[in-house]
Image 1 (cartoon, rainbow, N blue to C red):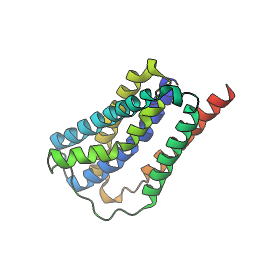
Image 2: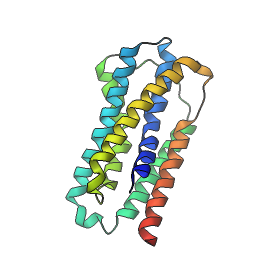
Image 3: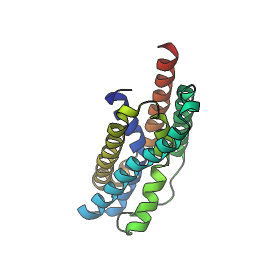
Image 4: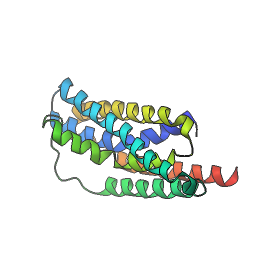
Length: 186
């Protein structure tokens, strides 16, 4: 697995953060840097921590996983991708400003948007040499996408209607297929 692939995975994982941040920016109404950076920090932090937890669980079962890792990656990324696509087609009922509600709602939101990163951590078990690099990239990309999402929401408001979860889901499925094909053919 190379840096480009890790970055693509990080971008796909950041789509939930991005979508929530756009909604938050719409609700925020005006630029407030502290709430935006607080949200981005927590999203980046949890997106970086969750793969570590998934990796730790996966490392415990490494000998069992290595023979099946390409299947595991394909299944996990396909399930997460389909979940994201499903969420992209579902209708969101209410937009509320999370960034101004304090730490507790933001932490819960950061956990909720990073559950897929937890499962992704298992995927890095066969690649211990790049693991630290991967979690840094995942965290930084989520931080950046959260900031961008807030500003897109602020500046485009309710007229901005992209289904970023669908794009992220398709990317995750594509990465799963790529890992499977690489492991099976090479």
